[in-house]
Image 1: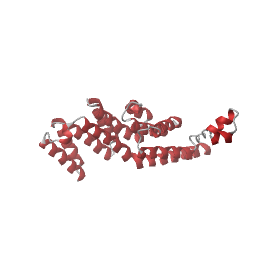
Image 2: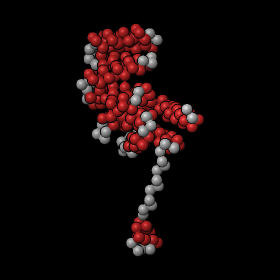
Image 3: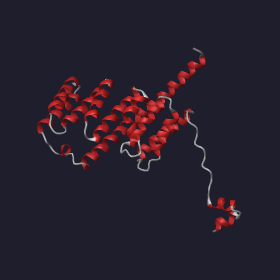
Image 4: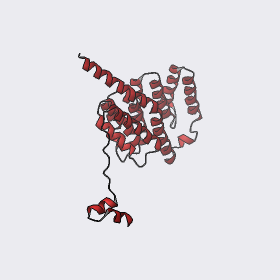
Length: 247
């Protein structure tokens, strides 16, 4: 291997590491936003199991599993979550499955976590929970999977009519960047940035990503917009610019 190829590989690795560091810094906010959207939809749709106790026993089982996980008893927690997922009532089985997938991810079992989220996505009748499962799977795959893996899960969520389009667009852009599809990544980030419903937090992240890509030289600096004003238009039409400005 030539020195030029070695230096190129090192440069690409450093570039990927820098963007990965940005992504890991922002990831909690990305997924937190998705969860918040689902929670709002849940309230609006009247999912009573979010706000009322349909089953005190199931509720206690869920909290017991959370306590076991916080105490470091992961195997015990997963066993309790499996039991609740199989025999719980109301919405507790779904919560148990989501928590189990998160635990697997926290323990470094990314493949197991993705499989758990995929299973949730394939079995949920509620579209918002299905979308959340797909986003959480894609979130893990940005770092560990391929662009095709991410696209297969959230490609349809990044469309204009999707409530999850901003979160999906960010994840898709990061996966495109990682795959070296810089023009596509730039387009994904700019689409989110220019979304009139995007909040300041996600806009700031898009600006960070685009600035990072620009500093790396993987995208071109935007061309300045042509100056167009009334005076210019008047001058073109043969009117003195000063007269047009005075009008």
